[in-house]
Image (cartoon, rainbow, N blue to C red; front, top):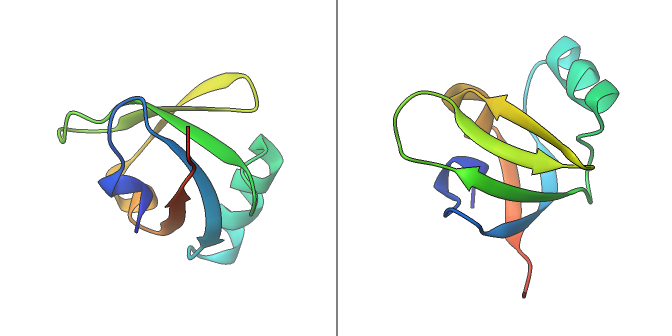
Length: 75
């Protein structure tokens, strides 16, 4: 599934990131790499979604979120 499909308060683990190289490097610099756990804070289906990983909140655009492949982590 993609991060864009994530539900509010859901916990997910990054399986793959399918974006162009320069954007992938930027996300890596922020700490978003394969294996990172992400909590979806707000995914109201309009505009950017709010997520939290490595202790920091981020707004991720829909186009980027649909390029991040995740799997749900059992709570």
